[in-house]
Amino acid sequence: MTPSACPRGTIDMLILSCLVLLCLLLVIGVSVPMAFGAVLILIAIFGGHDISGFLPAGHWKLNTVILLAIPLFILAGSIMERGKIAAPLVDLIQLIVGRLRGGLSAAAVVACAVFGSISGSAAATLTCIGSIMMPHLRRANYPEGTAAALIVSACPLGLLIPPSASQILYAWVTQQSVLKCFLSTVVPGLILVVLLCIVNFYLVRNFPDLRLAERPQRFGRELGVRSWRAFPALLMPGFILGGIYGGVMTPTEAAGVAVIYAIPIGFFVYKGLNRHNFWQGIREASVTIGVVMVMVFMVVIVSRFLIFEDIPGLAKSLVFSVSDNPIVILLMVNLVMILIGMVMDDISGLLLSAPLLLPIVTSVGMDPIHFAAVLGVNLGMANITPPTAPLLYLGARVTGAPVNQMMKPVLIMIVFAWLPTLMITTFMPSVALWLPELLFS
Image (tube, rainbow, N blue to C red; front, side, top):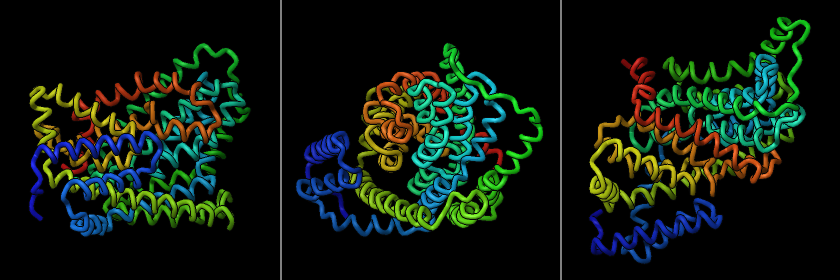
């Protein structure tokens, strides 16, 4: 396929029009696949491109075993949510920290991290942990807006603590090692857990009416009982991550094992699954999978058009025309990723920004694996950042808390937890690269 015969100025106006149309459609609530489909129609009509030439390329890109991990992890998350697999984890964490002021809400943060390491999805983490923890937090007299905001702010840990569907896609798009991308987000994820807990303790310090959990008379026995009950759930991340990092399973095989393991655990151990909600979960997961894969297909075609017209090269030239200082360039790249994430979900934002911004960051010496961690933190933060903030509005539906009450505490957590994590991850490469270099040296 040869470059477009259209003049450079016409192409630039077309691309600008496509970006404006895409942002407008996403802001007014058009679904992501339909918004990208409208962009493709605009390209076909005014760009002089035969879109049929891009369709086989999109099909070829999707024809890979690696991408099978994404629908399998979505299915596993749906089964675990209905199988009440997270409930014993929450009970165990609550026993350990529930007697502290703010301990119950800190338990929600840790539960999001643990469940995120199983499901690999921010939305599944929010739906599951939010529905479990919010009634406990209400009964303990936590302010509704603050409690819901904390859960919403912690649910993107599912994008950072491996396995993560977003990191699988990043590795696929940029031709990097999936395992290295997984490992790059572990330390940033742990830093974020600590900072969210610190901000949580600060926010609840002036709430005198909090009900603290009472210490059981036989604490050791109760700890043993709850640990034993949570043991089958805790085995899941052990199987998944141990199998992947031990070289026994690929990420796709590990996702399949997660599905197979979750079904009997949900039916016979925790007994949250029954015939009705099992098939309901499969149907809902199938719809989600269909939407995600159509979205991936559309975004891949648009990304291919951008690469075909050398938009990454133009973006690189534009950035370097402003400044050649690496710090300024990385700050600009972070700002662009935040803006992209504010109007798109994490998957479409990643597929669009990864090929566009990777040439820029590598030109200032950033390792692609380091960029995987920066991108993960950026998109996780952007998904809870107003005005669009898809996870914020999903959290309002899950927890029943008004959005206006959640807005201020969410912004506090963004400023004092998410932004410091982003800056640390961006300007301290060892935070992202230490584990990959340690295990792959």
